[in-house]
Length: 522
Ligand SMILES: Cc1cc2nc3c(=O)[nH]c(=O)nc-3n(C[C@H](O)[C@H](O)[C@H](O)COP(=O)(O)OP(=O)(O)OC[C@H]3O[C@@H](n4cnc5c(N)ncnc54)[C@H](O)[C@@H]3O)c2cc1C
Image 1 (cartoon, rainbow, N blue to C red):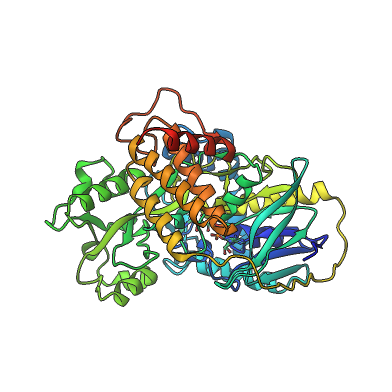
Image 2: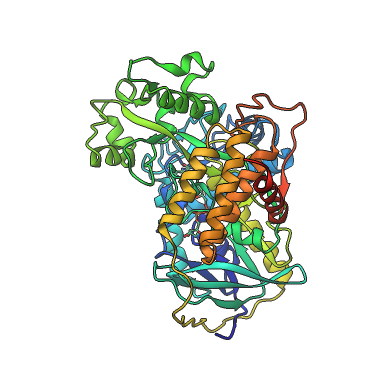
């Protein structure tokens, strides 16, 4: 099919970053590519804890930035942490103006939750654990009122077209299992807001669409990827065999819930002075060790919350009940699960990637905010800050916008390659088994070989190629980083190096490393 052209800004994804940018760009016409109906398929709508922001007059953005840097284990860019935390308050006030029903105290101030590694209670929340769903509902309602936003539902991106180091368009195809022949849409600017990669793991809290595809397609187009090895594992995914695993928010531990094992021992007190509120990587490794030792870690909310768990954490209570667990009466079984990708497409302070005409916001990007370990509830904040910054930079680069533009009509023809579910499942298992909570050279080398084989056997599907590209980058970055830092833990290099550095990797370099591992004797 001949390429289509639009003067709209094309936004890949429909989570918080994407919709925030679409609203910020208004009245400039945009085209939002949404694989699912709006509101579904994005991590944003699943966020439970809320948004970190220094809203208490006794708290400060400087303290928030310092906690962000401390959690990030040496690789947070301090200027990024300072500027993002300084903007946080303004975004909360903006969401409030849009009608987000943040929880309030009797005196009318924001209810602020305490989460791990924050020195202050500073996470604004909605209806207990409904922050993501409620914020997204307000943004979707706002977008529906904006004539400038065209949403193409049931369509996903599978590749980027480039010329002379700049992105010129996006290849899209239907997102249902049957697929369809890819169509190229040429556009003046492209904003990647396709979320993270944690769904590339077999044990994950992320929605099924969030499998590093957008990071992979940027890497295949030549964009520099930063810190791909830094993947955060959440310590308290509810371990009931559901895929994805439902989350038991960290805010439960903020309310006093404790971690115990099947022997009734509270194991975090021996691990860290902050016990259950230690940085997320430390708690995740402790939970993982208990699971490996057959000690069945569990989150006990009974003494701290009693039956308030039902009203304060309705999503958690519902996930327990549909799996036959009464959280008021017994502890909740938990496991460490891939949750958040700190790494991603290298993104500067205006939201620009390393290729021309390409911008990034949200979890797909790596801005330098999270370092080796994201501070809880900084994810939604980053998506908003960079969604708005990218929007304003795009507007500046493109100059005056046309008042209105016709909607783009895309008719797909049959063709393309349907996704191979078995190959995706095999890839996800490799990531959990060999590139998971604890890593080493032998496991990472065998992971790279396994990914290469899967790609050779099933690589005609473009969306699968995007996943294997990101998986290759994560495993290669992890093999190259011969130290343990934050969420990246190597049992063959258990200590951090004296100098903290960020990884900057192209797919080409990662593939060269992968080829080398294949040539080594096994
Ligand atoms: C269970 C859970 C709880 C969380 N709780 C919190 C919390 O309390 N606070 C916090 O700050 N963070 C939290 N996070 C992290 C946070 O939700 C994410 O980092 C954030 O929502 C990312 O926003 P985003 O817009 O970048 O991506 P998403 O919201 O994930 O949106 C990505 C979009 O891209 C689309 N997409 C994917 N592939 C393609 C493709 N090939 N083509 C086109 N579109 C594509 C998806 O369908 C989706 O619409 C949580 C995450 C999870 C999973």
